[in-house]
Length: 520
Image 1: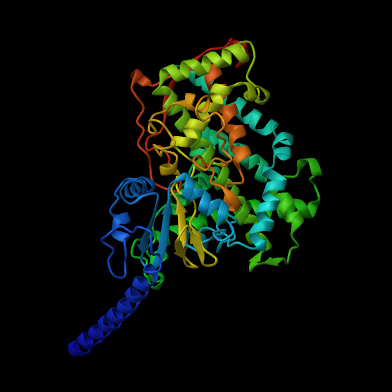
Image 2: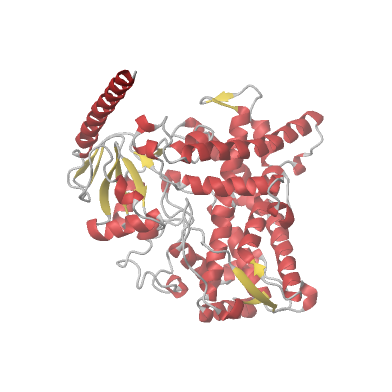
């Protein structure tokens, strides 16, 4: 019996070794095609440069890749298991890939998170290039994220920002500390949930793990984290059935939890649709999606219900805690650590708006320094420090370099926006640069050294939405309160892990009202 077991084990070992040798051969053959593009030394057979990334510890991947760019230049290649990956971090290379060759790199690489959390890539941000991606993205733009829809629904962010200000005022009156990072998160969720599914929740409900609010908040947080982890089978597909890291199991559990809440909301909307109890004015985005698809619709292998739930989740991720709230938290963090900038921002508000009324969205265009603060925050802490992984749909040439079909691409936005050739003292917080040397640089990315929301066909569709909320919320907080940390200490600026760059520690403030009491 023991001999049979040993023979069986040796046979399995021989087969596995044979497979490794074949895969290593494929990996080495593929990488040799990228002639003229630097590659860090130390790539190992079969796994390539995996250890370079896995050894980064608690550093965000964008920082690790940025350190590699310092050594190997703004365009270098990595062998990640069996995959060829190009990493780009210069203005010139970004223009070459995302403008000149944008059509070639218009599709997303199929990765594990898209399969398990993204409803098998039904989330349009992860969907492959094609008609499905175009149609769903267009629907989200026209019905929710376009400027005319933002104008029509501007009462929603106005009322939610107002509710947050009232809560902050109450905390200040009670001499209590405000965990403003959480309050930004609750505000951001309520704004988008009201537009998406007609719901809002209290801070207590978000803190209750078993409530719909607590479950969706926790699920989205986990999804954001898991979207930024490295999954071994994304590099070595034959290992998909062996979840060595436990990430696949975590993704499946997170997906199940999110789907259960999304399905509750979907069934509520289907019931209301049957009753015909909603007027056109009361319809939210989920109602619009249900009216756009037949019950038995099947598009690119996705059912109507899957498309509705996937798109709802996508927009929650796009506009919730992973972007709007994180940007606001970093903006306040930077201002607390730079009191002169904070004072100048409040003086601008006092000059252009005054202290006898609240700043309105229509005032933002006159608040040049405030808008520069937001731009500089997005430069240092872009909502997505790395673009989603794109994949070449055909062979192409980048300069004199041949890039074969299937090559993967990631833009290191974090590194790009700290390029010392483009930005003087790039690691310093200097909003004034957007009033002087970079006054013409815009978040839309036309200058290519500054693309906080990416660029091209795969850029973030929620730019206008995000800026609307960030500008208004930041302006109201700065106008309404003098802010400080407990004990006047500097704020910890360590970055967390995940698809975004969250602050590791929650941001807590001591507030003092600046306006007449009757305005609160």
